[in-house]
Image 1 (cartoon, one colour):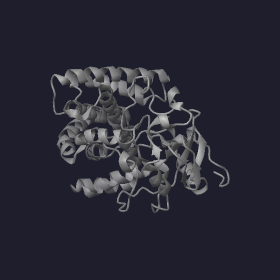
Image 2 (cartoon, rainbow, N blue to C red):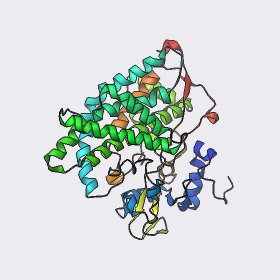
Image 3 (tube, helix red, strand yellow):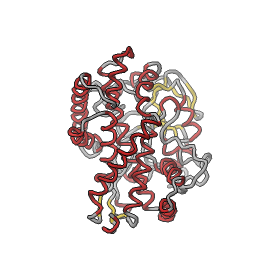
Image 4 (tube, helix red, strand yellow):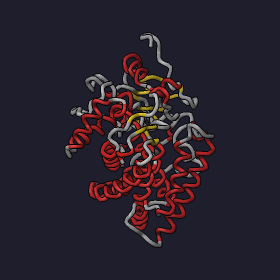
Length: 413
C-alpha cells in the first residue's frame, strides 16, 4: 500500500485483512468521513484514545432517530429487519434514562453467580458438539461448533424450551448469513423470531421459571413498566448480540491459534498442566488481536463536538472501529503480534462505558471452555484450507469467518 494513498475500504481483500488499511487511517486520517457500502456516510474513528473518548461521550446518542438523514427508515442503519418487526427498543438503540432502566433489569441475568451456575451447561453443550465430529477426523468449526454453541446457550438463558431451540438455530442461521442471501430473508427471520418471542412471553406469564424472559416479566409485573415490545426486543437483541459475537470470538480465536503454532503450543502446554491463568489472558488477547466485533454499533452526534481534531456536526453518524483501536501501537506494544501472555491489555473489544457488553462474562466463559476443550480433545488439529482461501462474512459490524475447515486424528476424540 503506497503510504500517500488512502486505502480501499470494504473490498474483498479488505474483509480478509483490514488491519493494514486501519493502520494507514490511524496515521493519516484517524477520524475520517467515509461512504459505507450501504451508501450511508459516517465518521470512522480508528485511534485507541479517540475510540475511548467516543464510546464514553454522552453527546453521541445510540438512538437512530438522531440521524440527520433518517437513513434508518430505509433499513440502512441498524440491524436488518428490526424496524419492520417492531424490535427497535433494545439496549443498542436507546439512551438513558430508558437504557439505564432496561440494562438494570437484564444485568440480573449476567451476575457472576448466574454465569458461574451456567458453566456446567456450557460444558455439556461443548462436549456434545465435539462428540458429534470427533470420530470423523474433520469438521467445519464454524457451522458444527462455534455457531451452535452460543445459540443453545443463549436459548437456555432466555428460557426457550429445548424443543424450540432448533427453530432458533435456523432463524439465527438466516441472520448470520445475511451477506450471502437476499436482505428480505433476514427480515423474514427476524419477524418469525419476533412472533415466537411474543408467544413465548404470553406462555411464560402462566408458568414463570428462573430464566431471563421470566425475569423480565416479573420485573414488568412489579412496577418496572416493561412493555411487551420492550421485552421481546430485549430478548431479540440478547440473542442477536449474544450469539454472533461468540461465534466470531470462538472462530476467530481458533483460527488465530491455528495460524500461530508457537502461541498455540504454549497454551496447550499450560492446559496440559492444569493451569488456567494463560487461558484467561489468551482469550483477552484473542479479543484484542482479531475480535468478534470490528466496528461498534451506530452512534449519532446530538450536538457539535470535536473528535480527533475533526468537527462532528449534529446528526452525523459516528462508527468506532474497535478492531483498529485495539491494534494501535501507541497503546499496545507490537500490536500486530499475537502474545497470549500479554499483561497490559486494555482492549475495547466489548466496548466501554454504559454500553459495555452486558454479556461479556458469558462470552468469556464460552470462549475459554470452547477453546480449551478443542485443544484438549483434538490436540493435533490443523487447518484444512489455505488461509488465503477462507472467506470472511460481509457486513459492517461483525468480523467472522464463513467456514473454518479443520482436520485431526480420530484418536483425539
